Length: 151
Image: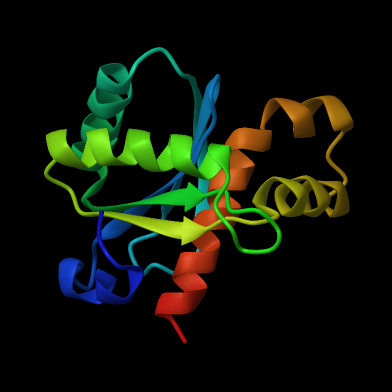
């Protein structure tokens, strides 16, 4: 796991990024465009095991010229790290030991709420919003990193 301020050292002009919203049952994935301007929802995986998640991340990375993976860090609203944050950090530590792609964490406070609200502004029905909430939250997380990189 690396410091987000060092991300530019690990990416080139056309490398893409993956965003991950890590849940205990589902994992939302998003991906950036080549120019790292826009994050798009990619897919939602059922969380089965760390190894299956690693295999999926490696496959997506290889197929899409991905040079970094961003995991959302679900901090508490006051900025402290509770049990959810610790659980994600524990999984990210295991993943970072087995995967060669640089991994970063990004403060994801309100990402699920933000993704749900954004999809409501796009006039998407509630059933579809709930179904896609994990990958939309991943896109919300990744978009925060893209905005950080482009400012």
